[in-house]
Image (tube, rainbow, N blue to C red; front, side):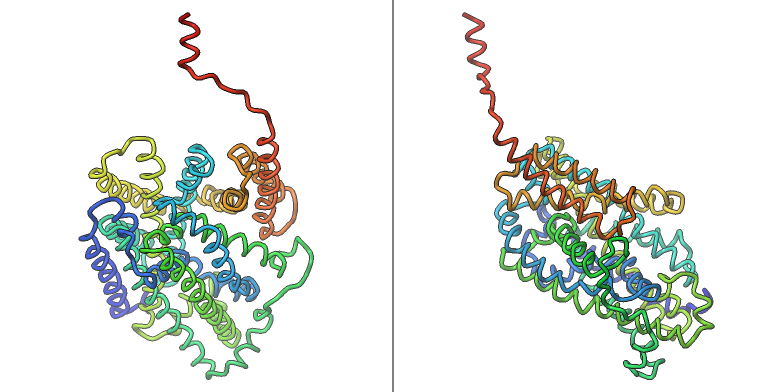
Length: 494
């Protein structure tokens, strides 16, 4: 199939990569200190920030994976995206006023203010470890697809993505991330629209017939009450609610963008816009999945050459799209990957700097913090790129990391939520609640046949309940008064 990829297609990809790097490097001129580097000086416009929020969460895995999921299963998993604007309003009401008042750089700074430094440091360290594994996979997975389907060699694909993103993020900081995210968003949407138009054209623009051809893959709701059923309305409602709350209220990658705007009003605009724009984006990717499922139903000879369901978008592109359009789709895959990686790099650097180096006195001078921030960005860029090269050999390790993310989602969400809504919540209570919630999640995941959608729900509810009860109980215990040290010394001296 590599022979089907023409010089024009390669030129489209090259132009996209060069423009991305150019925009990122141009943004470097305004970075005079670490706050400029991590937050763009807290004066970014709400609309580019809203697009950046979407781009940060729309990885190439999800960009290609939605169509693959529908081809293999149905559309039910994506029907509860409508919960995002509702959860966003809740976050705006409960979390954002606190975050804005504290003028945070790292969202985990809030945990020290609310609980103590140990809760902050542990949660920040957990974010770093899990995010590095996630980002390595986010580079490797699309690169592997491009090698299998398009013929672009794996190592150059990983190197171009990792090095290119690291260069412009290293130099340009958050301003570069937001500007390139904005451009990359429209590239990936352009690739998606192109593939949908060609698929519908091949199906004679008959939407009704396309829907019929997709058959069982258009099932939208499963009202089964069986907890073992993988995807049900009840499981999706609970899972998506906690997923959106965790991602959009407690994840540094997303929350850091809230801190880049000039006011709370701008933050609210960015968040609401992002949640509303996400709906048609997901709908677009869903319709691509339906259209490709219908196309492959009437072209069984092509379907027989599809290696895996999640390869269906690039597979269709290489076999059906004309010259130039193939390059645009692949550029869209690169765009989805690069926006995710650049967002993660800047956030990892911010967390390591603010939650560890600055907090514990290793980087005290402001004039040196910008230099240290860039070194941290380069360190993470190199680490993630090298890890991506070995993902094929670290499959079991990264699978564990992926499971840990789902295991910790509920307890971390409860940790922040209790802090915001629970006046009695204290560090002892939330730690006991979080540990109990994690144990409950591990038991449900490993010793029952309950669907994975319920794992984070169990972790969240147990952490909330136990955390509140333990906090309440701890507050009732009598406190032993501690005599000041100078009084002790004066007594001993007499």
